[in-house]
Image 1 (cartoon, protein in one colour):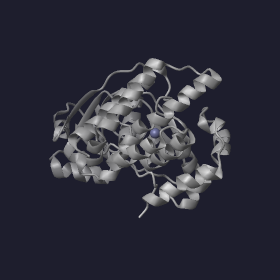
Image 2: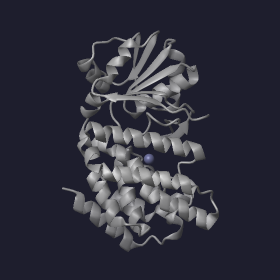
Image 3: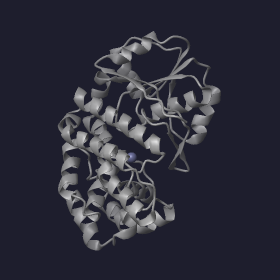
Length: 334
Ligand SMILES: [Zn+2]
């Protein structure tokens, strides 16, 4: 699948353009984003479908049961965008995405996150080509959900360290020019952190543009190494251990805090970036015991899951490190 750059329109009322779409329109959404959209715009598409879950069987069933369409519209969060991507991928039809929240990179990536046996698997291959970034709709969501979108850019900090480590120790392919581009994205997030925190139009556009750039350079080299390092292993370990779903930004925020310490990679700066972007690294939906357990068993989890080479392979996991992270987490809790 070759990368196609998306056409991104952003502004206060751009989702109104959906009303001008030609042909048979199928909108894939959920109750809350659709109610929000309907408060702003008067429009009834040909067919409206409310997403229930992302189980593989469910999305496969939709392909057969939903009426034929010329355009599929994904309106809502990650699951709405991913369901729309699945349908457009299977049907080969035009797709327009109007995310109402920017907590995940689903509106920009070519992969579709589905659940098989309660674990996330990625399928499909379709690069979104038309995006409507409606500031009014996005700003209506709770701020912390949109701030969470910073996590997969902030993760570049710890991911680049691990990528270089893997290159040095195992000879894994490394691209210095791509690493530099990733670093530029991280710096741009750093410079715009207060806008991201405030979920201002500039903050929203910054996140979307950084996602766009990240998806592009990861597609060029065929790996997410520049943004996926051991901080994501922490996130996967938490989900595996608890068998619950969390806001991705909470888990990755915790991962950045923990792994920057393990790497001895500017941990104070990383913690400060977490705070300035509003990432909830204290993981309010987890208890301290769960976090402690996930960190303590990181090596065995990584082995079992067969995950990529990182600082988890080389640094000792000590009680001191675990307790240092827990201390920061507790400090950030009310
Ligand atoms: Zn991520």
